[in-house]
Image (tube, rainbow, N blue to C red):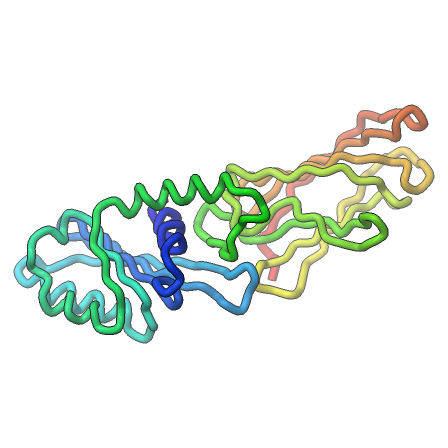
Length: 260
């Protein structure tokens, strides 16, 4: 995904280059792919979106045609940096368009942006949680909703995140083990990353053996099947030698479509 590579490339540069919006123009033949990266600074982590459109350059007057494109794409936006890539920018035909882009912005041209972006992405995904950065990219393949459990840990109430918004749906999986506190219901908290409100999805474990509180251990696995749907699998593990596992499993398909 070239948008995702652009995202990782842009935010791996020095901060002054992504202080505001960032634009990428990819020119191949008569086509120009225009991408504008924006981030919502009101959220933490910051929500990143990339708008994209394909435009055509008039070969008879390339400079004027490209000037019209870049003025429309950047119009109404504060842009910190612009990246130009693709064979279509070869030659020295950019005059007025380049002059326009360079006014108050840093402009870079090269042909290895996507390969560098892929390297930055691979390096970032190998880093530990402590070194994670402050951005979440919401592309076509990324999860749009956080899926969490509200749990008690060492006497404190906290949320355990099974699926994080911004994770690639085909790469991520969440798993944990919990002790039930006397109920046969489990609440899943579904929340958009830019919202303070959460939707609670209550799942009932039918035919769960009756046991005293905190003597039923469950393994919960959440695995997305798309960016807006998660398969939940819950297995009864019993409680050691005291209560043997019933070997019961429950499966649910959880839709994230109506989370607001």
